[in-house]
Length: 433
Ligand SMILES: *[C@@H]1O[C@H](CO)[C@@H](O)[C@H](O)[C@H]1NC(C)=O
Ligand SMILES: *[C@@H]1O[C@H](CO)[C@@H](O)[C@H](O)[C@H]1NC(C)=O
Ligand SMILES: *[C@@H]1O[C@H](CO)[C@@H](O)[C@H](O)[C@H]1NC(C)=O
Ligand SMILES: *[C@@H]1O[C@H](CO)[C@@H](O)[C@H](O)[C@H]1NC(C)=O
Ligand SMILES: *[C@@H]1O[C@H](CO)[C@@H](O)[C@H](O)[C@H]1NC(C)=O
Ligand SMILES: *[C@@H]1O[C@H](CO)[C@@H](O)[C@H](O)[C@H]1NC(C)=O
Ligand SMILES: *[C@@H]1O[C@H](CO)[C@@H](O)[C@H](O)[C@H]1NC(C)=O
Ligand SMILES: *[C@@H]1O[C@H](CO)[C@@H](O)[C@H](O)[C@H]1NC(C)=O
Image (cartoon, protein in one colour):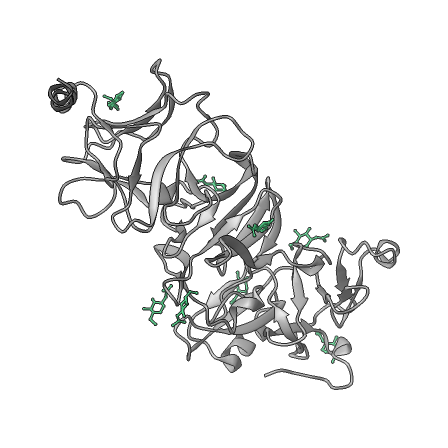
């Protein structure tokens, strides 16, 4: 008798299938009409990532998210309903034939959904790089992708990008806390103005910038310059500007995370310890704090005080400056001349280049042409040349505003040439070239 009953069960299951199609095993795809219930997950085809329901830290709420599948701790890299958690385990992700994903509870309340995109024969699929996508049959692009709605984590191969035609940016925003993936205070994105830079905002306040790309890394991230663990790409194209990284050793897992307290951390997985370590993090010192020394000044972490005015400049508010509040920055001692070609430039070596969001970039321009271009334009306050992405050729960066957020390093960094009137050039009388 027991044997008879055992054989019946699969039949009962099969009969139920058309009305309640739930995935409980490891597929990577949801077809229209299929659902993913709490307790089930999708797993990418190579087994790297899974999409399923989770409860973070000390919370008791439920979220739908993507995490590593082969790493022992629960490391979440993307959250769908970060600001509208489910109160219980009745959550269901369903996928409709109009291409829309929808997360709802047993009462049919919708907690999160994607727009209906109506591609032909859509499927929703978790890819090996952790991108959860909606794609139509035979269609090249994605009708929707989780990479366009990032949470706080940049993964290998994922673009930190801005679409320069539409202005659409991928914003990476910290969790509120380790227990709450809700939208936190800190946002990381690429700003495509001037020479593109990565910005970290706290609310609407700029707290850190990467500086422009200078060939092998960003001007403000010395750790990138001579690093052989990772391979970085930066493409400041006219249609899109983006940054991405890959581990050179494919078995090294790494991710970039914007932490709730505002640190951008690169973490790597230590297999033998079963834990993530912080490989590096920014901002790293007071000089990384945006505008710490005000305008026309330079921040040097190896000096005390760290702030000093550039040669030819003096504090705007000497009283505050002497009390180590440098925010008001510095002003010129002598107005530039511009008329009779007497202005010159002073070299500031080993710099994190000043904010380039209002700078003008001339591609394929060497040092001499760059110097000339700056000298002949009276509004030009400084120039620098930086290596092109593919090395070799150089491009010329011209500033015409105040120089902000300039710092110097003990070694490495870029040469910056600051325009001064003859009187401020000093005895060396430098007139760069
Ligand atoms: C797409 O389909 C879902 C489920 O059938 C429905 O709830 C939603 O309203 C549809 N969206 C549009 C724009 O038709
Ligand atoms: C990204 O953040 C910036 C700065 O806060 C904001 O202007 C922009 O609208 C955001 N973009 C998206 C797609 O959320
Ligand atoms: C890394 O290096 C390879 C070959 O050296 C190159 O094809 C790839 O585009 C580089 N960049 C990234 C981010 O992987
Ligand atoms: C790649 O990384 C793994 C894990 O850390 C290590 O065991 C292996 O030796 C590395 N391979 C190379 C070529 O460095
Ligand atoms: C993992 O690292 C964190 C800090 O990053 C530490 O607090 C924790 O104790 C570590 N756990 C193990 C098992 O080493
Ligand atoms: C610094 O320069 C910027 C850009 O020119 C300007 O908007 C800002 O007011 C200046 N800050 C101070 C404290 O002078
Ligand atoms: C030309 O430069 C000299 C300094 O060498 C200065 O005294 C003079 O005022 C300048 N002339 C003009 C027209 O600015
Ligand atoms: C001088 O520089 C300003 C600011 O970059 C720019 O708007 C202007 O076109 C330049 N003038 C010339 C003649 O290049």
